[in-house]
Amino acid sequence: MRPVTRSTFDIIHWLKTRSWASGQASETPFMMRLLYLSQAIYAASHKQRKLMPSTFLATTSGPIEPDIFLALESNFAIREPLAPSTEVEKFLQSFYESFKDKGMVELDLILSQDTAIRSAMARGRNAEIMLVDMASAYRKGVPRLAGRDKATEPVHPYDENGRSDLDAAPNSAQEVRFTADGRSVTRWMPKKRIVSRERPVLN
Image (cartoon, rainbow, N blue to C red; front, side, top):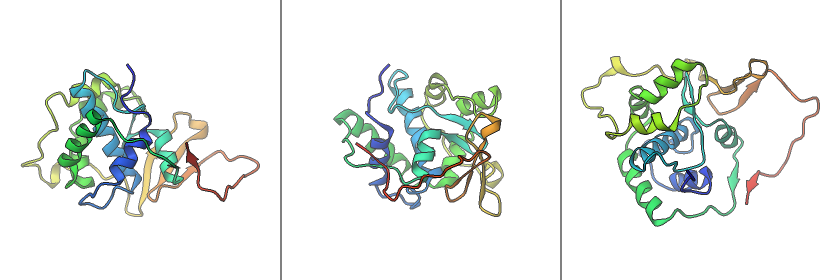
């Protein structure tokens, strides 16, 4: 089934132009959570249809879309984002109203109850989170957080030094890890490094 938006970057642009109480919309881990939740909630209410052409993996640091993660850490941008359709805009506005006051702790509490992520993690490291499972996880809506205390909070994906344990590549020979500020660290490096002075863009 065809996604209802052209690109995930169109959704990212829409989300970033909104005001979030946490002020974390520019941070990649926070955006990853918003993208995953919007995809899952949309699929739950639209017969498992994708909001955007993205596939998420289950990691110890939460759900990620590897290509989008790497693009965001490189400040990838599109020149002319496409405005969502009326139907999609209505959904995004509803999603924003539900999550605008939530920060990383609240999002992680929601994801800690996500059965789709649990199922994927049970299949192995960096397993794909199936869309059918995502839709099923939010069939009854977003889990309520009332009454949950500190003891139920998930482990934060960053250690005391601010480093992430996020594993983004399934190939152990070229394992990719990310630092808290979004930089990737890999075991493999090209012999010749090419550096562009221009910010990458997508038409």
